[in-house]
Image (cartoon, rainbow, N blue to C red; front, side):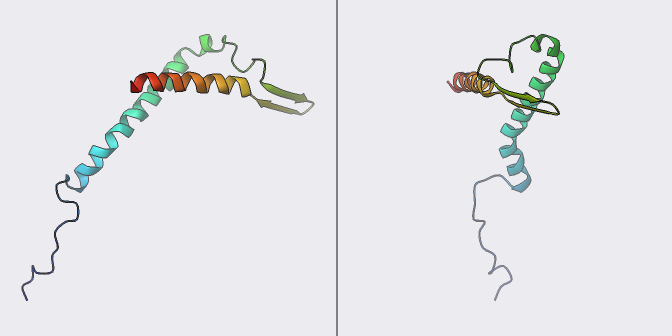
Amino acid sequence: MEPTANIRAAPFQGQVPGFLNYWVYSLPMNRALIAIGALIVLAGLFWSQLKLLPLFRLPGDIVIDRPGFRFFFPVMTMLIVSAVVSLILWLLRR
């Protein structure tokens, strides 16, 4: 029996080798993380202007304020943020 007789062909022939495969499939995630980081930096730079927006004080946001306890649930704000983000992502896919 020859020593090479037990070696089988690679199951995923035609793909790039292992370490290159990692880089090829991680590029979209790298770009997404860089974009998220850039948005966080921009939000930090413009924080004083962003605080002036009426977010988190809209009608429909639930606030329970008692002595020693404050509960805040921004229902309307999160609906608006979700709609804006969905619209932006929908426009970017087109």
